[in-house]
Image (tube, rainbow, N blue to C red):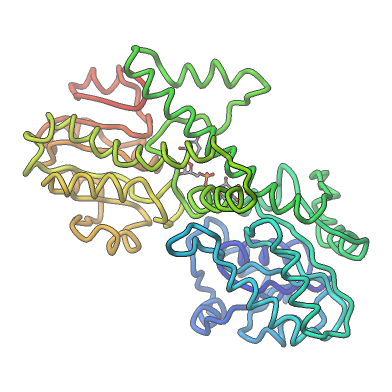
Length: 436
Ligand code: UDX
């Protein structure tokens, strides 16, 4: 089976490499000449564990190639995936579909055989219908079917998520589309990964509903954490206590500084817009978006409180450990660390930060923060240390060394990676999320 992947960003590249690894012949296409040149040299445009090796082995096996030419890349393809970005449109939060529609138009102009056109990009309900109209308007004489196949990949775990998915969702309106997609995913089908066939609009909505639900789960436990702090309860035990109920489930109940990343913030906003357009309010999601936004700055204030309040904080120094929105990625999009740093510098606090992968991308987002190249350099002379992202390297810090290096042993653990009793026994003034 020949597959064309239009868009070699995060989703396109991971999906393309995994499809090639299943044995399909895959061409990844991207307009960005320098990105394609780097891929030819084996240099990945993003940080994702295992991706460089997967790409290299499939290129060596002759199953994976790269091009800037869409016409060349889609020639002979049974399935053409659209995996370009759908950023939040500036101003109104709507998903910007101009890249998706632009690619659909180009596919229509160059289609040289019958093919299934698959939207993998996260797109609002009805986008598939518009892609179909664009292809029809192109006047192509070839048979085509437009299918929705959303991705559910977590950054940092994307290859595992692709190869061992909880489910594959395929929204197709005809047998041609369903047949080709069954072939595309046959290797996973054989592994007994469930494939859910739905209508196209339903499939488009499943993606948004899944992300909005997960964002809701996180925000719910974050609010419970705040309540725990007030009433003297322990949020980790609350998570366990409710998560053991199969109807609730234990995952995505880690209280923290708020969700960030490339998907939840953008997709919750886009869902609100769709709901508004169709006059069908989603008040729960509205509340989630508001609560999560205000939480990020509240986390900055939590650090200020640990410094003794606004008056005392001015002129003090804080070490920020972790900047990316979660570990094992260099992605800074909507990371809580941005709001935490901003709140601190606005309050006249001096901030030194360290992150294993995110500092390059973080620099322009937090110009007032000093980036240092190892955690202890940030900690030296600090009046407080705040852990914002749960990278493994922060789980194994030498706490005795930290106590000597820091000016005051104040630790604010926004990811609950330490046990309060252990850290306090070493003489730290310790605060965390939803635990007293
Ligand atoms: C998410 C979805 O999981 C994935 O299915 C979708 O396709 C894209 O969006 P991703 O953004 O890579 O993936 O990261 P994820 O691991 O889901 O975490 C998102 C955010 O939620 C992070 O900021 C993380 O720290 C936060 N989070 C997650 C919590 O605060 N608590 C949790 O229990 C889980």
